[in-house]
Image 1 (cartoon, rainbow, N blue to C red):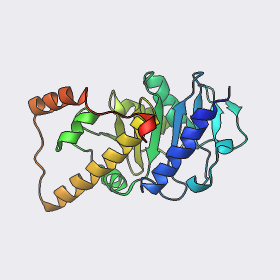
Image 2 (spheres, one colour; image 1 turned 30 degrees about the vertical axis):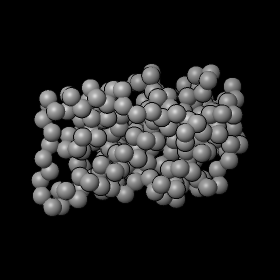
Image 3 (tube, one colour; image 1 turned 135 degrees about the vertical axis):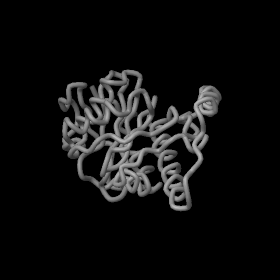
Length: 217
C-alpha cells in the first residue's frame, strides 16, 4: 500500500507550490496516483516547509486511509471526484494564487485571449461556489472542468490536473501567469480574444510541444 516515491513527490511539489507563491501558509493541497492505483495526498493544515514524507497520507479511491498517521487534506472529496471523472489524470494541484484568487472573487473565467490558453483547451472556466471540503464543491469542479486542465473555483482558488505532478504544477503555474496578464489587460481595456480557427491551430501545435521529465526538475 505504501509508495515512498509518491510521498516524496508530494513533499517536493508542495514546497514548490509555496516557494513559487502559488499558495500561502497552509492553503492549497496536492495529490498524485501511486503505482498501486491509490492516492497520495498532502496532510491537512500543515505548513509546506514542515511536511515530511511521513506526514503524507495514502488513500484508497474510496477515501479510506491506508497509510499514514496524519489527517488528510480537507479537499479529499475534490481530489477523488476528479480522479473518478478523469481516469487518465495522474495528479491534482489546488492553489490559492493571487491573481487566480482575484478572478475567482470577480467570477471571471479566462477566455482565449492569449496563445498559451491553447494548453487549457481555449478557456479556464469558473465553477459555481460551494464550501471548501464539500461534496458540492467536488461536483461543481468536475462539472465545470469538463475535459480541460484547470478550473477556477468561485470565491476560492484554482484546481489543475495533469498526467503527473510536474504536469499539474506547470498547469497551475501557467494559469496564474495568464490570470495576471488577463486581469491587467482588463484594467487597461478589453483584451482581443483569438477566434476559433486560431485556437484550433494552436491546440494542434501544443499537442506535441515541450516536455516535462522528472529528472529535469
